[in-house]
Amino acid sequence: MSFTILKNTLILVLFLGFVSVINAQSDYEKTQSFKNKYASLEQKIKDAKSLEEVDALVIDITSFKTDFIANKPLLDKTLYPDNFTSAIEKLENAVELRKGDFTQIVDLQTEVGTLKTALTELNDQNTSLLGQIKDLQFSQKKDQSTINSLNRLVASLKANIKERDELVKGIVDSLLQEFTTSPSSLNEAEKTAIFKKVETGNLFYNVERTIGDNIQFMKVTTLTADDLSDMKEQYKEFSKTWRQIGPKLSQIYLDQANRARQIAGIDDLFRQWNFRINNEIWSSINQAFREKNITLMNFKNGDDFTESVTTFIDDEVKNLGVKRAEESKETFYTFTDSVWFQQVKPNWVPILLENNLLSEAQKDSIESRFVQWKEKVDPGGFTSYWLYIAVVLAVIILALIAIMVIRRNKKTEPKIVSQEND
Image (cartoon, rainbow, N blue to C red):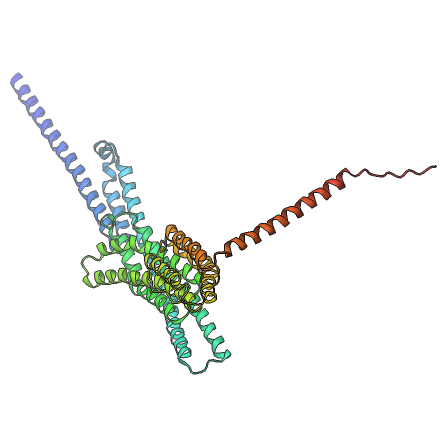
């Protein structure tokens, strides 16, 4: 009897142990199944290519939650430090963020589509205006009506180019914001957004067109110092932004040879634009001298300009005695007073200094030569000039002293108070 009891007890222990092993294995399998399906859903969320795919995943997550809700107590233990609820919430949050990515892309398509229409209209208008300006320039008619029409067309073209430049620069600026991280770290939705913005907005063409129209604008009109200063600032801001996104775009379009060439071409266009602005500045300065019948050697930079001015002054000094004295004086005063101090220094030197086209040392060197030139051409000129200044200052000082004395006397003068007898 005792043997039978022992036997039954042993069988029961073995049975319970077997059941325990089976249950333990089942719990492990349930946990692993949850983790595997969870990881699969996470990957599908990352790989989703459209808003429709993300919406389908919302349904999958709901089914996943329903399938494993019965195992919540088990999963709360095995998912430590997470638990069943927090794990599901992470999936739900991830899918909502992914929805946001694709919603931004839809909004972006609408925004860029509207922008593309505006840019196309401005591009067409600019083409028409450039054509009309060229026609008027080659026209035989040079009456006031033609000149007024030309001025109106140039003003319209200038306004259009500025507006279009701002639109294109806006696209480039927004791309710069998206490139706060390196392209290699962008997810698929972020890359898709950039592709959409670049391609739908026809970015490369519009950047090329912006630079090209600015160059053409300089060719068809005479620009003032203020115009060129504004354009130089525009170039510096635009090119700075492009230099920041150009290399990153090159990495994104690494596998597209045509786009890589286009990006390199835009880099070259920026160099042409800068060269053209600088050339226009120097040409305008040269024109200021030519209008006064002063011919300088050709110059395209600060060194050449300083050398050209120095050479001209040296030649004038050498020709003293060969030319009439009055002619030498007239050349000196025309060069210094009429051109340099009235036109070049107030209008152009600030632009040259600000953009490192001329140094302070070069400017000072040029003006120091004026003093030497003056001593040779009109030695008594400085003496009489400073004598005149001294006389004027003396008169002003005497007048101020007289005013102060009069005011002081008025203050110290006794007041007479009249009294009436009752």
